[in-house]
Structure formats: C-alpha cells, structure tokens
Length: 135
Image (cartoon, rainbow, N blue to C red):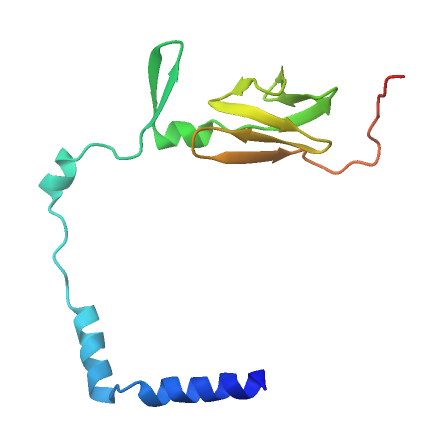
C-alpha cells in the first residue's frame, strides 16, 4: 500500500510540474550569466570574521582559524578517572585548551566549551590493557 501511495504521489508531482523545455533552457541561461560580486576594495576593508576570543585570568587572547587548526588535542591514556591529554593529566572540571573536561569514561572523554562538544577516544582498541582496581 505504501508503495502505491509513493508511486501516485510521484506521478502527481511530475504532472503538476508545469515546466517546458524552453523554461528550463531560460533558467540554465540565467545561471550561466556572470553575476556581479563584491569589489576587491570592499573585501580589503573587511575585518577577519573568524576570530575566537577566550578570557582567562582577565586576559583576552585572539586565536585565528589557522592557529585553532594547529591546536589539536590527543587522548593518550585514562587512569583512575583522569585523562592524559596532550602530555598532561586532567580531571573532570579541569580546563584543556579552552574546553572543560566534563566526563572521563573507559575508552574516551567528553570536553565542552561555550558552543562546542568534543569527544576524544583512545587511539587504538587494545586487548592488552592493564586494569588496576582497588580493593
């Protein structure tokens, strides 16, 4: 029954499409026409729109997209509810490169800043993990 309704709705849509070959050719011709863009002088006066602001210790740091791409986080290990990220140990609530560590799991962590959530996982799934448990 669903197939029949789907076929009939497709036929109705095709029948109601009132386009002729001439109308389609006119639309294609309009697409090919060169459109006027923004002048180079206007672009040179425009400020960089991709700037990230971070306020830490009453200082403001400006981070361009290039610097943000270079600043990558890598999770290297997890032990006793702490995560080893970029050669340092962090606990839940600690700040890591503008993100707050929200959750430390068995195979990954969750970091969050004002408008983004990042999930980091251990690089490889290993069967030789050493589990240390307290008594």
